[in-house]
Amino acid sequence: MQSHTKGPIPYAAVLFVLVVSLAAAFSVRAQDDPVVNDSHFHLTNYIQEGTDIHDFLRIMGTKVGRSTLFGIPLQQTWDHANTGDFAPWYYTQTDAPLYYYSFTDAAIAMAYRSLTPAEQKRFDPMITGFNPADMYAADHIKRVLLTFPGVFEGIGEFTIHKEFVSPKVAGVTASLTNPALDRILDFAAEVGLVVLMHNDVDMPFPKAGQEPYQLVQLRDLFKRHPKTTIIWAHCGLGRIVRPVDHQIDIIDRALSNPEADHVYIDISWDEVAKYLVATPESTQAVANLINKYPERFLFGTDEVAPKDQKSYLKVYDMYAPLFAKLTPEASEKVRKGNYERLFDAARVKVRAWEKAHEKTAAPAGAR
Image 1 (tube, rainbow, N blue to C red):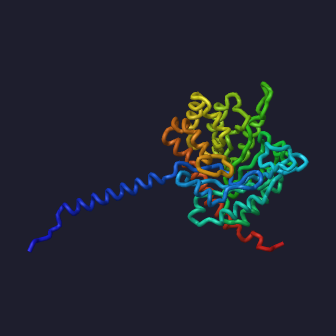
Image 2: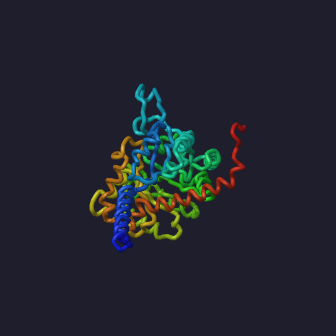
Image 3: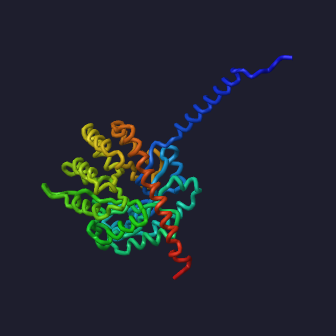
């Protein structure tokens, strides 16, 4: 009878199989690991139409891990006297006004609730259907949170000053000095909501030597709300709102100020990317700034109701020269880490606030 003693060969064989299996597993994980999170995404457009959220999940694929989720707070009017039978879907197509459309928040909440729990974890919905010039705006935000608990984690994108848009909005013009905005930001701090705010750094066609007064007002607003997490959308740039003189230096000074450590900047929108990576010099200057403050910048697309992944990630591809100049640490934080840090914290804080206030929510059908 032969003896069947256990020797080193079977053990080595098992070890080899384990190593190969682990290598294969890590290879699959590396392929599926998302390359970016999206801090700025509109599911719907200026006439409240958009991409089905389930289709958008497929568009995100494995490249985009998580995304904010909000609509457009403004509805474009179709004024037949202005455009006749042509139905405008964008604010530059007509002189007719824009008006605030609060139902967008309910639409986003219902879209989010149609997802499975695993799918919901990939989204961070935002409340945006309010008028920032209305003292009741904070009450709207509170009402939405209590009506749709477990859904929202922030507010925005909402606009104070924006080229072409601000003059078209019906009613009182939003302002950085309006106490209604202070009330909104105070409430956001109380709840733990992330704030995503659009405010141009300057007017579209400033006269030579004109002071960018909006920067002064913006600085003062940030100082008044040190407990509010604020993301300044597009670093204040726009379609024709160009960087002001010494803007890199201005942002550098702001980010170095401890009084502004609650303020972050998103680099979303293709209209912004065209300035930041316009030349090798501008690309390097922006990269130097981000490398100096890697925890303060977030990537976003600012895409509106995309149809496919190629168009959705157009802005990401535009930033390839910039990402190439970032340190590995800065690149990871801008693309993914800063997003996760801010919105993970918001999830915890907002859910806790909702739990503490659930008895104050009006019952269904209450008058």
